[in-house]
Length: 236
Image (cartoon, rainbow, N blue to C red; front, top):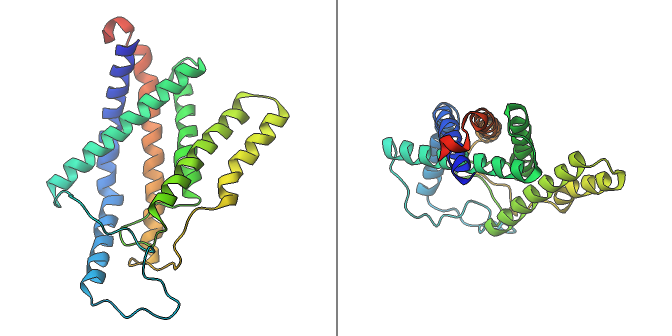
């Protein structure tokens, strides 16, 4: 079983990851490069004197930059590797939850689980913390990470409770759990200032969610197609 899980997860991740890596180069990657030109231009200008009542700490992306690949082929390579690794992680997660739930792994069920995963890890957190370009305004990093993780977990649990049971009180509790992170609210910056145009940021948010949704869908379909075709004997 372990060999089968490893083979299906890695192959599904490779197929879905490579397809999405190519798609990213035509959609989100050009927007990131454009945003970086705005960010670099803003950093090159002399810092303006702070205005009364304005905070100039903590409302933009943290600038403590470590190593990053050079533009061109190195950046393309490392972005592709990261995308394939993400797709493989999604594939392994889908296999794990379907085995835990006792569901047969086929195309239809795997796609359904993938869509639920995208809602939990993509759409729900994006309702409070939209995907951001470099130079966009942002709140505290740790606070955002905690809120994102809590929202993804709460949404996944709520979907499980609502869809896997027919008990009315449990379903009502699932709705409360689903709404709770958004009632609490995501951490946001004190001042919504950004170095990139709003139109560019909005386009990036929309395209990022589309690409992320396609990543979940392709990973789910790949798992559903490969699992029945790779027997435990073949995997070994």
